[in-house]
Length: 162
Image 1 (cartoon, rainbow, N blue to C red):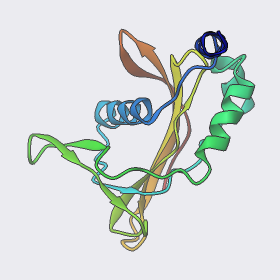
Image 2: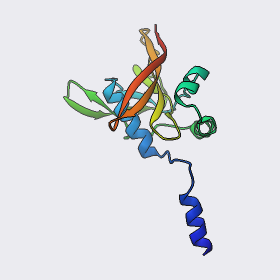
Image 3: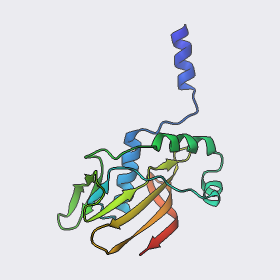
């Protein structure tokens, strides 16, 4: 009966599960939907910045849940072979190269996705960087909501270009 009670307590937990499958499916959908040419991605995830107004509007009662995700994201890195981008030249999806030095040509930084407790809202940041080519870069952080099974961008913030 102890095993049954443990199973019941575990299954009744109100803490939703954020696993790698959810993280990579979310990021792939956003990369493709926003047509980000993420051919090269920095191996280390950046940390998303979520100002108070965004948190109160989109992640109202999720403060502890978000703090736990930030703790889980410390030193998180992108797994090889999990992210894809649409390449017009090849007319299809291609695997992103994961750069451990984060210094090859034009490359992208992604933030670790931060989800609402109901997993229907996510915050993701994207930065295009060109360290050695002096072209500058661009970036933004955005709020996406799950609508009809797809992630739809509903708000952009921290948008910049140089």
